[in-house]
Length: 194
Image 1 (cartoon, rainbow, N blue to C red):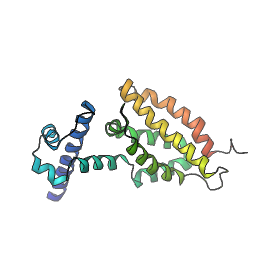
Image 2 (image 1 turned 90 degrees about the horizontal axis):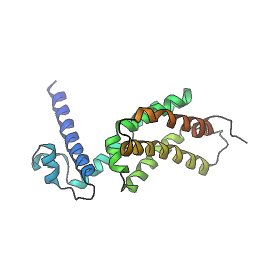
Image 3 (image 1 turned 120 degrees about the horizontal axis):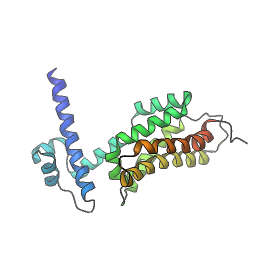
Image 4 (image 1 turned 90 degrees about the vertical axis):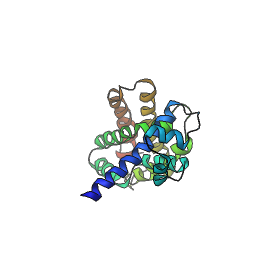
């Protein structure tokens, strides 16, 4: 029981440092973020920070790595795509929404294309596994369509976070309709096959 509590506290402390970095970044992305500003914002001392991270760059990398969906997320998406592509889209949207603070770090007005490409290059191969091998699309066509799918999801979250913070649920329906009637239909049905 004690180990579980200690683990929970460690995870919470690490999360607090990450959230402090994101808050500082979103307040002023042009300002250099220091260990001192992070520890002040998070309410810890520098020694505690160094128990979790080597430096600010190490913290930034940890945040970026958390943005990349894990294998469990993709297993569920793959299962849903086989049975109900609409539900897989809802799950993907929910997954990205849950990471929206960190995604804002990536997709703010200045952007972070390196991180965007890291996420894109992680998600795309996972989604490729869901496409039937007998689909009559070339590798380039599949790559292109999957990039459109991912970009629409991320751009939707960017739009909501910049222009309509409280309207993400209102946006879910039109985005799902666009993807379901376009990208998903193209990849998972035979309607567009020659």
